[in-house]
Amino acid sequence: MLEEFDTQRFIDETIQALKREVDGPAVAACSGGIDSTTTAVLGCRALGERLTAVFLDDGLMREGEPEAVVSMLSKLGLKVKLYDVSAKFFEALKGITDPELKRKAFRSTFYHTLSKVVREAGAQYLLQGTIAADVVETSRGVKTQHNVLEQIGIDTLKEYGYRVVEPLKTLYKHQVRKVAEALQLPKEVIERKPFPGPGLSVRVVGEVTRERVELVRRATKIVEEETKGIRCFQAFAVLMSDRATGLTEDGKRRYGEVVVVRVVESLDAMTAKSAKIPWRTLEKIRRRITEELPTVTRVLYELTGKPPATIEFE
Ligand code: XMP
Image (tube, rainbow, N blue to C red; front, side):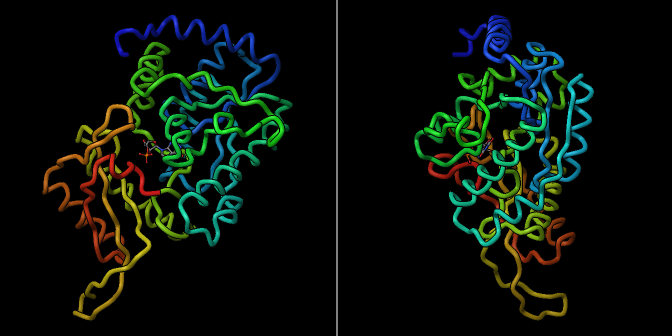
């Protein structure tokens, strides 16, 4: 419960535990989100120079994200390395349309790629920012969160050659925010909306290709820009696999892409409501998407809450 959570005590105990548990060099897998940044900063306080923060550019991030994240982590005093591994991810995702198989292909590529990185750093430990909701949802079989391994019986030492350390795995999002505030992380990190580990791949229904990711990346940017002033948990675009009829400027029939706009309110991602955003905002998003991305013929707004839907589409 919110009132019972003692933030400072959690920080002190976690730093002590990391000092005990991690007896050599370690790598922290960072995405720029609040969970992994909080984990990396706790790791740095416990391990100092022994910790290297790594950012894998999988080609599935939002516009400008890799550079922005690396710069933010360096400013926090972390030793950071950026790896461009996008080709590996697109190769692994090629031809896969089933959402669970996509998540599993992402997970396997992510952790095998990290194996090399961890080995290069001479480390045996990987710190990652798994939180309680990730564990609960994967264990319940809702979906394969990319970062849940040990809890579903994956022996990471055997499978990937390192131990996974997850200092936040008992916390929910609002508690992680308190820890991040106490650690004085920048506002941009604390207020950053959650973004899924497998990135835009869970927002492309059907096959994930560079072109389809680029389309959803551009639509996402429009949705994020236009919803900046709206209080919500997440706001994003999804590219559907079906096409729908539309008209060209000279009145000819054509098939085009269908983009879904999703804006949700939630406290902890376990349940969510579709946000009642102003019609004029929706209309502006619609206009910008169809004008700036002319292959799109339809823009839909998603009304379903969680449950029965999930927040992401895949
Ligand atoms: P769903 O779609 O399950 O999402 O309702 C709940 C929250 O988790 C995020 N999400 C993920 N985060 N790895 C992550 O780190 C994942 O594989 C993943 N899948 C979903 C989602 O954005 C939402 O905040």
